[in-house]
Length: 328
Image 1 (cartoon, helix red, strand yellow):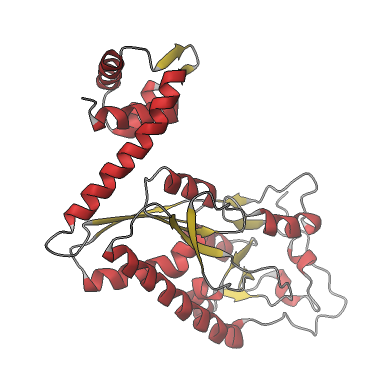
Image 2: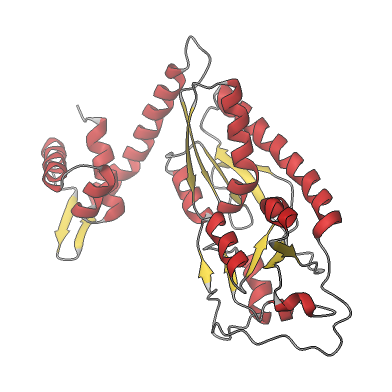
């Protein structure tokens, strides 16, 4: 009988296409991984991977096995997840993939609320771009994905749309843009940008025509760590794009200033995604409610912050030109 651990090893090797990288990801030695793959191939009676100089590639039989292995491991994981809650009604672990912006706005408060009710719960929160988040969901490596929705096709997914939150350009206290009257988004985009590593096409299509970069979009800094991006904006002349609730502490302290520009497209577009063919546990349903509740609270808070902090730079700066950024 095929062992599930052998299937998980084969999936890791198929993903990384290299024994050393797959072994590292599995936290095991390369010789141990090689032995396990060989054992699986002997049990199947045919090679599952073709060894090449550049790495390994699944054979036709290997590709078929990988497809079935994902489903088998997903079903086994579902079984363990459901059985783990028998008697207590509480699932032991919940794995969630989320984009960096929803992670900073709504996932954190939702998880905190869950832990107050069920302190024995364990969460595995993976923060990454929406493409990788959806891939993990389809591979059944997470139960939910909370991320950008505009580019996600149905493909067996259930989608629960979240509130659209307005985004704002944010700069440090004393930034030259604060002395510019009648500020436009084009003028803002003449400065280096610090953003998430993978902006959706709906946003890129608006930024590219006015970007200071003439040969494609290549921001000064892009990463998935919102804390790092806020620090960079606070300590340099870079411009960040955030919802106001994400920078509330910095706005209150005066370290960051939100610029008000009339750009209706500059909003979030997030949804909660889960697989249609995967039964939701009690705790999963409750987690959805917590995320939706946190989302509504953020919407109210963003409106309150906009009334207080979102403002146009001084209208008294007549004829003053924006200083040219030194970052190319």
